[in-house]
Length: 84
Image (cartoon, rainbow, N blue to C red; front, side, top):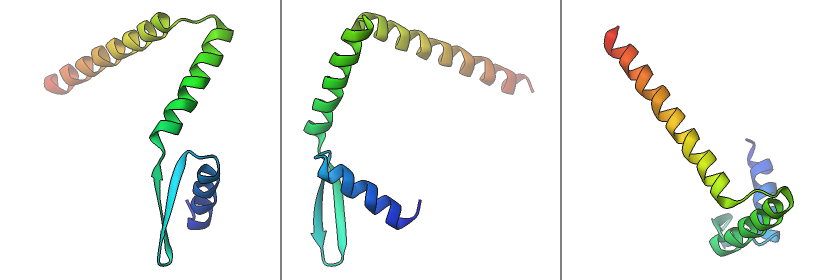
């Protein structure tokens, strides 16, 4: 990613309050604003989950089943490597 593009996006995130910037000489250092990000994620989760009718248990179960599938696939891949 070109430096100018990265700087542009980081500046926009800074204006949105999602990152904090600190200038030192000619460099600008950015760090995440964790509390603001958590607030945004909470808002989006509350807003979209309530509209879709989804509940957190269903989301958690879906994530868990996805993890199990990945684990099983990894196990099969490791078994194939061991046989070869």
